[in-house]
Image 1 (cartoon, rainbow, N blue to C red):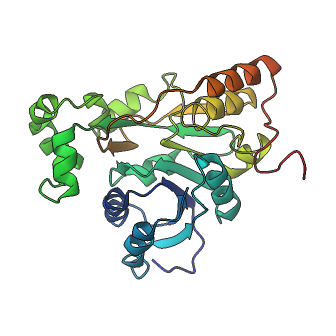
Image 2 (image 1 turned 90 degrees about the vertical axis):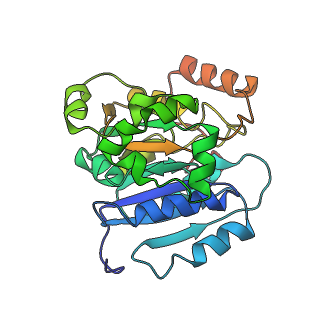
Length: 277
């Protein structure tokens, strides 16, 4: 890929310290069915391991930019807004740093990209054993991304306590049959037009804990602004690496979201632009 060419999409990866997962993601991005996208690493921290990992990919065909900020608690939404401002394309794709994309992931999100449409897929939540093997390179990602091999490995996924197993099956037929079904936006697997995010003032930076602020809040405000949520399940697929759940939804987040809905205002106060700017 000529790194000077304009990019159709900007893939924004939210990361925090997990360099091994990031390596798996970048290796998958090297195998995408399209290469007309740039990559922004949106780091909520300043990890030396993340920087070291990225040093191995700057000379590949991927066009990577790395944005970091001081580690001062959960400030993911601040990092995401910085990435939105830095994006050079109008089509933005968002993933989390523990979700490895299928090789057709970017292409699937680009298929319906347009202003007024936000696409969202789903993820297979892997169990502990297979996740550990993926991290140690003793289990090939191809066993999940190849449809035939995936079916052969369903029993192993069940034994390993994987969740949402149907969401890991790449199927154009199932994607076509379900594309018009209602679906809610999933923050680790969605895309939308940059102008639509600007209209709602981006991510609400008043959320200072995980949960709600990166998906439910964005979903509600985009829909309120007239954006249609498009179902790309079975085509925009991710493989979520197991890790112990480290948090519950904070009461502050719940209250903030409830107040947002009560206000009826889809434009947040502290987002891409702050109230004091």
